[in-house]
Image 1: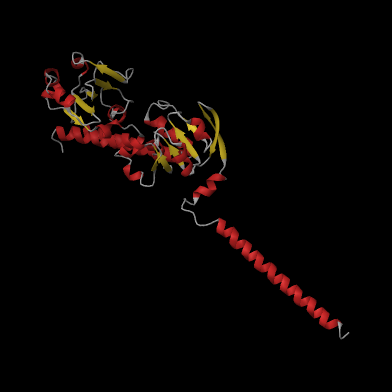
Image 2 (image 1 turned 90 degrees about the horizontal axis):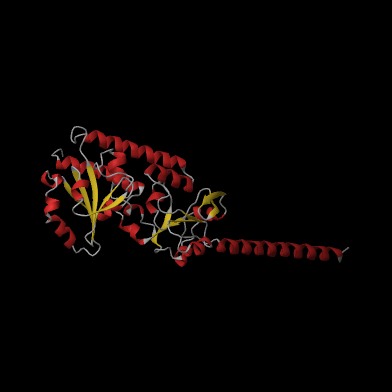
Length: 329
């Protein structure tokens, strides 16, 4: 019995030591696991995206499985459309940064090139890619679910906002945006009551750096949706929405002229020569709009834009121009 007690004590001591070592190993293991989960610079929503619930979405390329609630989206030319419904846009093509209506919303968004550069897209770890052009669709599809929405898929602000609200999984935000748009449009129409004649016509035109002159309808940018759809102002008699864009000769211009004429100039090199020629033209100066001081020379980048955010902002811009020219501001 005397020899048995020391042996039992030794066994118990060894058992405690082994248990202690095991506890140390577990703690070490936990530390290693936590180290692999080192603090990330990515938003906290990103890890959830990889395990996000998916759904089927029909596209021109077939059925694509996309996240029900995408958290990190890359696009080429749909930045404004996605931002209008509150999407987290992490990458866009470079000219989006020239959009004056989106600059404040792109502070955490990166340039991904045009067409979208696959390597840059991979760095941004998107869980959804939305493109207007399918130049490198296959490469992008290997990075994240990719939706191809060809230009012209949606024909007005209502269809556009609903489309992207569905893609982002936020139909309620789409409805709210449309409600705000309709409210601003109604306010604009009210401000113009008694200022413009109900028979007055309003035309949108563009001069190019090659001297070409174009007129535009209600869905080709240049403010058409704001002017015609929101404010419900009349087009020139000969124009129609059947011709969203129509090139004019100077001889034909008087037939497509309006009581109020809004001109943008596409002049990327800022030469100014073609606009100078137009302003000196007897045809241009002979128009009623010129005689009545109803010619407006508008900034290209501001009025070229046709995303929902731009269209909504353009309502106030047109209203303010018209009021000011009529001595009401």
